[in-house]
Length: 303
Image (cartoon, rainbow, N blue to C red):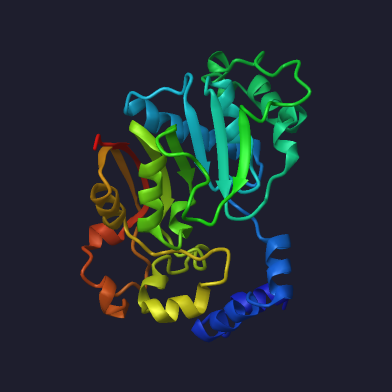
């Protein structure tokens, strides 16, 4: 039996193992290994990047928002700069990627970084919808994309190194569920957005440690907050466990108007039982618990 199989077996897949692994992540060696081997989101996969782009653009278009001459922030680009580059080719004036770790470096401003992405768009007929919309000449002859057009910066997950009311669009995919202080970050999003600016969020509401076929993707709702913190507080796949309506309430409380909301419903796990959830989560209706993904666009209301 491989180490991976052993760790994923029912024998070790329990809170005690997760607590031990979480404690290991506090050590210098654990942090180095996690940073080296942790994967994020799209993982610089051009096909996946284009799928996410289509989802984000559909959220913007349904809200009648375009990218031309806009300033765009992407929260949590991870190892994938492709969405930032595509936003520029779609007309954005400036794009900024914000992440808690320095996954990306100077390569983000080298046009050759995106050769595989552009080749896929040019050669695959399934992406014909996108080709006419891209300004491929914008950086076609440039050796480097200007820093005034594209930046990737590190932040602490809460406070954005961005001036107030200077951003038109904030978007993210599979990032907000990992935020340690959701209310503080939503407040920051409001601060940096111009009046009428929008935030597009694609949020994965599943247990990120229990996502394999047949596993209980709601298992993380069985634990109290202190236990969950002991299990995951230092791990890269930490999730805040907010449900769809919790996010809606957060945005509303911070002065946002909902423009678009789409919910992906998944079957409840085979062994699901409401009484197995921690009391803090038993009040959610079953239809709310079935929401596995939330895709939404919210507009900042005028003060």
